[in-house]
Amino acid sequence: MTILVTGGAGFIGANFVIDWLQAYDEPIVNLDKLTYAGNLGNLAALQNDERHTFIQGDIGDQPLIERLLSEHKPRAIISFAAESHVDRSIHGPEDFIQTNIVGTFRLLDVVRGHWSDLPLNQKSNFRFLHVSTDEVYGSLGPDEPAFTESHQYQPNSPYSASKASSDHLVRAYHHTYGLPVLITNCSNNYGPFQFPEKLIPLVIHNALARKPLPIYGDGQQVRDWLYVSDHCSAIRTVLARGTPGEVYNVGGFNEKANIEVVRTLCDMLNELHPAEPISSIASHHELITYVKDRPGHDRRYAIDATKIEAELGWYPAETFETGIRKTVEWYLDNQTWVEQVISGDYRRWIERQYVEVIAVRR
Ligand code: NAD
Ligand code: TYD
Image (cartoon, rainbow, N blue to C red; front, side, top):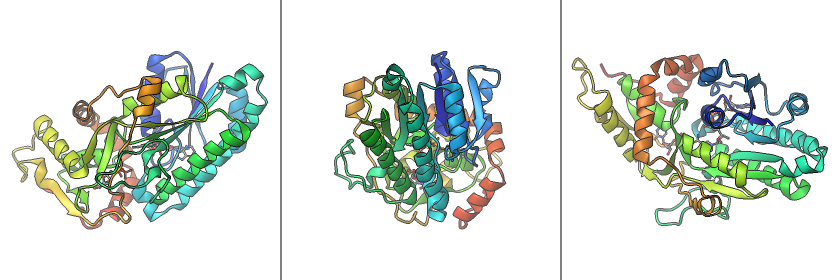
């Protein structure tokens, strides 16, 4: 038996592939386009592992997908491939429409054709698991209850709108054609191999370089944070025991305001990586810099993960405190990885997005 993973060279996908092969012997075919966000360096630990086959390609390339399905006959597909950064979607939505909507549609359609020709027993055991986000539900007020699976879809950014569209397509392929799909909507992830454009790795990276730590707006926006290996275990659980056609919300039971997250990171860096005596900063907190808000910035996301807990017995293993410590330690120990993924494209992005705040403190 084999599974096919898409987007397995990105942050969550790479963690998923590594964790899977630690837990099971079942091989993985890993299809990834290797955009700026995909790095083979994330999979270096699997270099000599014959259970892992890497293919560079696009989820929208239907002849390629057809070939992979008929050659490897996967029993399941877990689809992580997406454009994933909200700020980039604001500057340029086109890639988000192409990959998240058109790409998911093309992938789904080839998979449907392949699945409909399978023998009956393989057909009913087959799964297509679509990895999605809590951002499709829109923004909550401070006292509103957390998102359940039946919360209305109200996406506010080009990113979340493109993910919402893909969720709808996946749902429709179940309803119309009977494709055995599963959808997971997860909150903000953090942990090893996250590209340093997202809040937590960006703050760690900037703090180590004594650069400003940019806080959008008033920093009171709330996110629910989940350590990435817990998201991976949730996906394994849903794949093994989830009911086809169902949606499962995944969250960390960790609602935090952005400024609180950044202050925690500063405390941890003060402890694990104190500023050198020659530096003009005594504490990383001095680097915190409020900057112009993100347009249309969602105020609060919160996940009600009762369904996956009650029906499938999943619960996160890490608290925010244990997960954030592991994350900071990982970035301190893996500075070479960070240097490798910071390409010319990354530098151009930072200059464009943080035009007002690129100063470096000595
Ligand atoms: P990421 O940006 O780190 O990785 C995405 C990967 O997909 C990259 O390796 C990239 O090369 C690949 N990819 C992009 N376009 C492709 C295409 N057309 N064909 C094949 N591969 C392509 O993203 P991530 O943070 O690992 O997120 C993975 C998935 O999880 C996404 O679907 C995202 O929407 C979802 N998600 C992310 C979070 C989060 O906090 N990061 C939370 C909930 C859900
Ligand atoms: P991000 O990591 O981009 O995830 P998402 O937008 O998908 O939730 O951002 C997390 C939160 O941090 C979000 O509210 C935006 C905020 N943020 C900043 O305040 N400064 C930054 O430089 C970045 C990248 C994000």
